[in-house]
Image 1 (cartoon, rainbow, N blue to C red):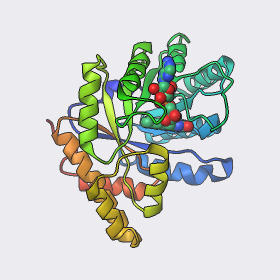
Image 2: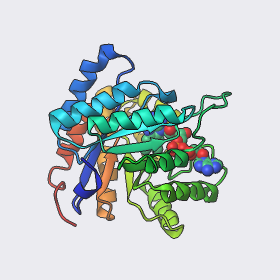
Image 3: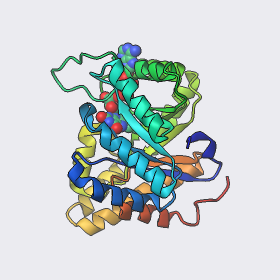
Image 4: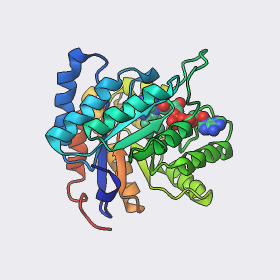
Length: 289
Ligand SMILES: Cc1cc2nc3c(=O)[nH]c(=O)nc-3n(C[C@H](O)[C@H](O)[C@H](O)COP(=O)(O)OP(=O)(O)OC[C@H]3O[C@@H](n4cnc5c(N)ncnc54)[C@H](O)[C@@H]3O)c2cc1C
């Protein structure tokens, strides 16, 4: 099931889950993913283990979601340190499993390591998928606050355009906590000739430890309003969870009211968080713009 034809001019949410590191936890992760899928997101994405580990579980989880819940999935695939043969095998497996959508990523480079692979950047992976003979819908990552390795915005957008020119169909953003950053980013990339759909990525922060982890990964800017919320509720887990879900809901409503219909939510294998967001938006979901 390809993603793009299903998207419409009503608010639609897609949800992200991550696979288990080992087979031991597969059943519990699958159960959480299927509970999230029962909320009927427009699609679900399944991340790929850092360093390229765990592809088996990413693909298996996508397959289970499609088979059991009939929701299209987006399988993440990273290429750093990988050889063409391995990526080709992955494409064959995805095709065999009936998964039509790939999030094509470079992946993080382990500090101090020089990757010895055939794909220095995500654009190389996208080109390879496009020339593989398989007809995948391809997504790629973008960074409203620029990728940490980029020296400036111009360079970051130039490389983003290379990915789009290589054949990606849509972009999903890194998490951000200030919608103004997304609006500025959209303006700049449209000006640079990037016209594919962009799905903003919203991360509901439900605990103080989660924000610390998220910031280490994303380097996102924290607006005062959000900082106050963490300072005020951070030591009360249930209050922090409620406030974090309310903040994410507020970001989604603002994005939708500003004309953005498709929003990706980093639900992090938490069905209760996904359900709470859907509940908060129940009268808005399905409203035409
Ligand atoms: C939506 C989203 C989902 C993600 N999912 C996962 C996941 O499932 N698993 C995982 O391990 N990681 C994931 N990541 C993290 C991602 O792998 C890292 O951010 C990684 O460091 C960069 O990946 P990329 O695909 O954006 O790389 P690239 O597009 O290759 O960019 C990486 C850096 O290289 C620069 N660059 C790009 N092309 C060139 C070029 N031709 N010449 C010189 N420089 C260039 C870019 O400007 C950037 O600074 C995700 C990130 C996002 C935003």
